[in-house]
Image: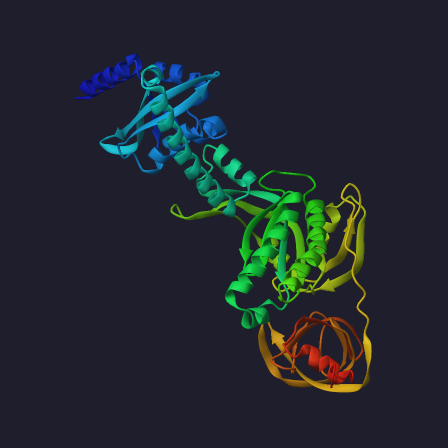
Length: 474
């Protein structure tokens, strides 16, 4: 019995080797296991260029042969369903027309891949009526080009070009798993966005957010960042992968400054359409993380995991609108001149002990990019204004109503006096309208400097009232 099986295998291999038509065997994981001599001649390739390698890494980069590549990948993805295709192929400056017939590659009666029989029908095609042949080829190419364009556009919505190339070039690129690497992580978030969601029409909100994301992505791409995912109104971005660089910390800071500078144009666009202006906080951290394809065999994503990611999110939570805060580990890696506006000691959740974070607004050559912040002048109130406020735990009210007095205000900040215990970076909800949200950014004795993070619709009227400014015509 065993001899019979060996003889059958020898006969099968001999037949495949001697066939005048090309034969290529590809496993379902994309690896090419066999190409006969005729197949090598038709494709103008050497055996060592193909056998043992992934099909994607061999052919994906050849734009002129996209119809051929799409055809073969489609056969693999369909798990070997028998089909017949006609596709153009270019090699060594010669145009060929190929006929590809697919069947199953089996092992112990179980399908483990596909067998492609490739025929060079160039001469037959040339013998047909030239006009009809070219018209059919043109239509085929247009359909394949449209399909490829749709796939490329859809694929590009989820992965950067660099991520796609790294995954597809790797023989095991789509397998689950990862590697440990030191990266710089950026987290961004819009201030007061929850209140905007409640006030705006859905179509206007989506238009505004999509425009904001588009503008921010331009800066992220300019400084070699990879957008991992959108987190509601925030973004999760990494620098230093998939393409490794020694400048990932500096690139991240430069991108963050560029993003904050772009907010001016974003808000001009918003105001032209009657939308609210936006403000954004950015947190940056550098450390080792696990990087790779995360998920299940049916659904996976290119992602990052580790304590460094969580800390980047914690650092971002300390920001107010327009701020960029970076960790000590990021600061240490930056060799360029860095404009540090202030240093703060904080105690993030999940971190043992205190850490130092740095507020930055500029980085020197070769980036030479600086954020110019507009002065926010406080107006001393004619008389202190009594207010009630709640402490917040996350976005939820925590504890009873507390009392304070506002001594000075501006469009973005206020000075509050209170006898209650209050700490730097604490978030509060002031009892104005449906809620005036603020973060404590500085404190001295019984006085706290607040930065507004979310304003109610009545904010302007309330400001005029406490400043004793009359409405126009009133």
